[in-house]
Image (cartoon, rainbow, N blue to C red; front, side, top):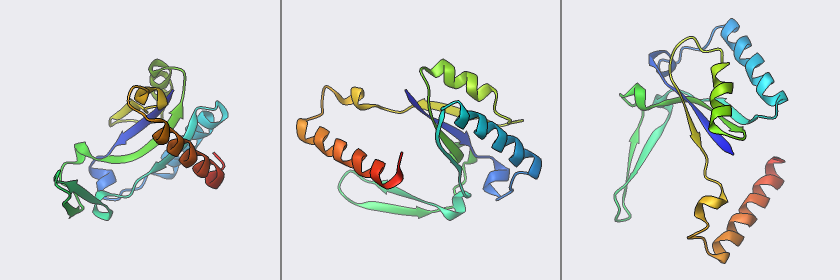
Length: 141
């Protein structure tokens, strides 16, 4: 199973406050442990929402773009990991080892092809397979 581990934003991350050298070292050590265990597939921190945008779709084909920053920090993401593990409980156990002192982190399972078995057509499956092959060829992952 793959999981997205979502690190929630706070006032510091939204104000562009970077981690200390000690915090960065601790996170680097933690990430190294994740990689060595074959858990971590990807992960990065995100710039504050002032460098982002939201695109709203109205259901009729029109869109509205809102430039950041966004007011509700509790709804924002400061960083993420993509992990591969056998279960949600395994992901929780790994997250408990993270070097965070405060804040909130959410874990969500990523859909695999099995989630769409009842609705996917052979054409859509072939397209999905082609796209995954192209991504793998480009990224080596």
